[in-house]
Length: 237
Image: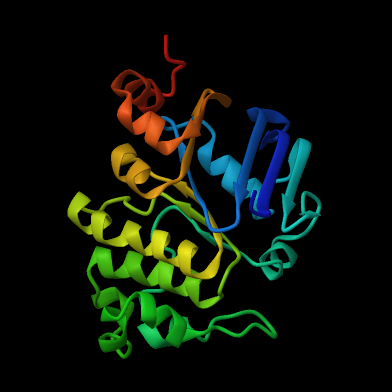
């Protein structure tokens, strides 16, 4: 079995003392992608925010590359090799594409050439202000900036938000390629369930903060009853 890049055990997390997710277990081996599925409000974003240190867990452990990061500040978790592409286009409209690759923290090296290797179209746009890019190009940039950090664990929240499925279909294979080529792990939250399952190795589905499915992506993709239940965030009956 490959080394586990992410190990979540018994995670309960939420806001202002109210639990949003309860008793969640997720593991991701090196080089694999896990799709985190479920309806709005199921707790998917809360899990990603907890991994990256934005939200503190109430119970349980979050281990990245073997170290428990549950009490670390977000910048220290990032230095462990975690990149978080948050929901919405986390880009600055007044800056150029190239300027985004100079926004790293103190001592951080952003490898723009590495990112352009995955998104060659951005190289031709490097001097263009981001506000003039299409929605797909902006989302491409948000993901490219994350890849420029060469993360060992990549968290991606709703890459497809506001984008046509045809654009998403072109972008998701980049995650597969990155995981395969670098051995990084990816936790993917995606509303287009079938596209996510085409990309992922395994899947976890949530409903009201509880896990209702955990297994191989191929199993979920081939069972329409299970697929519908996971899309709705319900336990299949």
